[in-house]
Length: 311
Image (tube, rainbow, N blue to C red; front, side, top):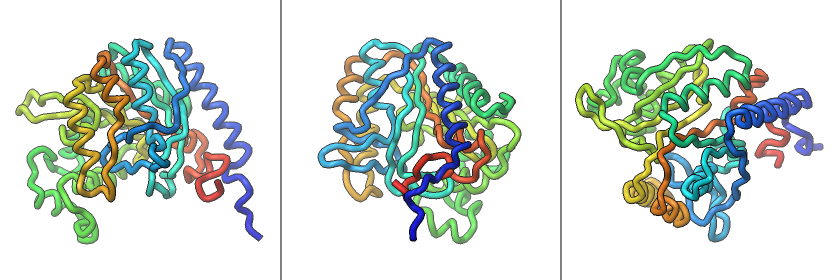
């Protein structure tokens, strides 16, 4: 007899999860950030590198609430946040799931530094861990942990830093950098503080605006990620407000050769961008991962009433 009808999370974990959501609402309410509900389907895909949306007839299940929240920003609604289920194909494992809950919020007029501080404050509030933080630029993190400059190293130099099995799994420079970060650097991030990696390479900008490294003119993305040990928790941008630039990025990503089928960009987002996105910073935070960290359970499935395999 199967027991798959039973919950994947304990009662104590679900009680803790509910407390964390109440704490999240109190956090944003105190800061005047409006909670909104967003649709779980949209007419076009969120064309992020490495993310595979789930198609639903002529629409897509959302991979994050990014697009509807930006439409609210363009409409003049000010600072907003949402907590909602999100869906991504092919993401299943101890710390990944095809369906998961994301917190995402946007702050008008914020600098990226201000948003990093607020993100760490929320994580510290939810987990009751100190807000001690270690910050690196993406470039300095590679230099510190691997003695490599990711901006100038050749592809052969990057491949040489991988083991033989890893070399067989990569097909391009970005794959090399992803694997070096996840498998050779993240395991060394301090477990007793938050690690923030900022100023990513321009070819990993996604929807972030671009910057220039004052040291040598290298193109950078105004993007950050937050980790606790090797657990990635949040990914934020100083948002690109140039409608034409963002449209070109999303169309190129939607047609990327590694995709099994072409993705249709979100026409509603494109129209909102043409109307005008205000200067803002935004961040997405994996709520289930925050619950995992706060409760000490070992897998994402244990943070959910019913995980993907029991749905």
